[in-house]
Structure formats: C-alpha cells, structure tokens
Length: 45
Length: 388
Image (cartoon, rainbow over all chains, first blue to last red; front, side, top):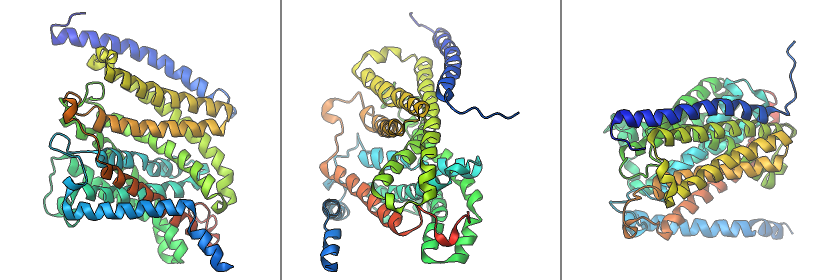
C-alpha cells in the first residue's frame, strides 16, 4: 500500500493495530486459562 | 591440621579465579584513574556510551529490580508466602545499585564530583538528572531496607526495631522510585531517533524498559535462588526451603504473564510505527531472535513449568529471560545504536572495558557471599523469629 499523507499512514497503522488489539484481548484470556489451568480451585462459597 | 584446613578452604579453584579477576581489575582501575578513559576503552565521540553503560548500568539496574518486585508483592500486595525471598532480593538489589554507582565512576572519572548534580548544578530538564536523583535516593532506601540484616548480625536490637517499623514506607518509596528511573533509563534514548534502529526506537521506550524490568526482577529472584541453593544451601533455614517452591512457581507465573504482555506491546509498536518492512533485513532477523527466542520462548517455558509444576523448567526459563533482558539492553544501547554508521566507525569494547565489567560482577558475587554467609539473609535470626 502506498502512503502519501499522514492521514493515510494513520489509517493504515491504526487498522492493523486495532485488529491486533482484538486478537490480543482474546489471546490474553486464552493464555491466562492455559497458565492457570492446573491451579487448585479455591472455592469462596 | 587446622592450618591445613584453612589453607584448603582459602585456596579453592573458585577463590583463586576470584583473586586473579580482582587483581587484574585493580590494575585496570589504576590505569583508568591515572591515564584517563582513552587508555582503557574504545569510546569515541560517535560512541560515548559503551558496555559500562550498556551492561553495568542498564543491565545492572534492570536485574536489580527484584528488590522492589519482591518487597511490593510481600508487603504491599500482602503475599506473605514470599516473605523468605524478600531479604535475598533486597540484598541483591542493594548490591546491584551500589555497584552500578561504582561502575559509573569508570565512565565519569571524577569520583569527588558525583554529588555535583544534586547539590551544585541541577539539570532539572535532563533525564539523566532524574535518573541520578532516583538512583541516589533509591540506593539510600535500599540500604535502609537491607540494614536490619546487618543490625541483627551486629546485635543492635533497638535501631533494628526502629528500621523494621519503616518497612511499608520504604517499600512504597522503592516502588515509586523504581517506576521513575527504570522508565527514565529507556527515555534516555528518546533523544536519538536518528541513531537507534527503528525496530528498537519507540516513543514507548520508557514503558518497554519499565515492563521488562518487572520481568528482570521476577526472573532474577528465581535465578539467584537457584544459585543460592547450589552454593549456600546449608545457610537456608526450614522456612526458606519450604517457601522456595512457592516463590519459584508464583514468580514464574507472574513473569510468564508480564512477558506475554511485553511481547504484545512490542508488536503493537511495530504496527503503530509501520516498521514491518525492517523485519526482512539483517537487523530484523536479530530483532525476531530477541522477540521469539528471549521473550516469547521464556514466557511459554515459564507457563509450561508452572502448569507442570516443573521447577527445572521454570529455572531454565528464568535464565532465558535474564539473558533476554541483557540482550535487549545491549541491542538498544550498542547493537542497534549507530546502526547506520559504517562498520569501521562502529563500537566494539576494549578488552579492559570487558575486564572492568567482569571485575564489577565478581565484586558483587564476593560481597554477596560475604553477607549471605554471615548475616541472616537466607535464614531468620534466632533472636527475631516471626518478628517481621
């Protein structure tokens, strides 16, 4: 993609960043579940 | 018989190597302070900061972050199960910062002028002034935090009891000051966008340095615990040995999650600056080695070790992460710095520069051994059991 203006640059980089952010949010939840998957469950009720 | 034992105890291979390193270091120190910085270093106008800054200072400060990480988790977040890790971590942090200041003298060359920025000529708009002020203050805080071990050893009960009452306040100071100067060390490079390779340069450098310092602190506590178990196991009391596994898995879990976060914010930075094209170059390959081999890999190894309750795997991950921090600081301050200069003008350290760094690390290990074998660092003093 050719970039000529700051607007185009921001549009291009923000598009990718927002997609990555979405993937990261889901990825983090999955990673946390992987990390703590074998921890002993602490019942609080 | 007694003499023979003493001789054997003194002239061990480890002590002989330590003695040689310290002797060579003393000679280089003499040359540095009598013949100037040019006699012992390859520093130049293009490369005024070499491994004394890249390794002794940047790595030294990052790897000493175990002090604030451990004391904050124990005293501020109330995780008392990590209490036995606090004193060794504070001792390492105190020694780390103290020898950072010692190493800085080799660069500055005027030991008597060290207090100048504080009392004579304050550069209040300079990040270096902020770093200097923070390191000076935090070194004082660490000294007071560490002092109960020395005071218990010396039997000065009254002063020790007063200092212990300051613990929470000192811990808060420690966290605040560390947040400030760990990030400011990264901010130092913001002034050189044209000199630092775009893959490492970022307006978020302060955030990267601070987040990675947490990883360095957590990993160093696990790594130095491994070394202490190998060399000073006989000095550890039952509580320390009992809590050690919990510290390894707890800190390993935290390090894994923070490393994952660090990986993602670094990726976001590439996206924000549109630096993807650089990944296809030689520097890009090196950047990918750092990101996947020394950020993603230790994060995964930590997670796997914690899941499988595998102490060895977590320890391997801690070594991997510590090497990653050293690699990152080297990349920012040396490898990717002045990346566009011709090869002939690039910096490579003089053997005496490396000698000074080895000398400083050996001093830290020697002093740590002296303290840990005499003072109640790895065990609770019998007169102060449960008095924390």
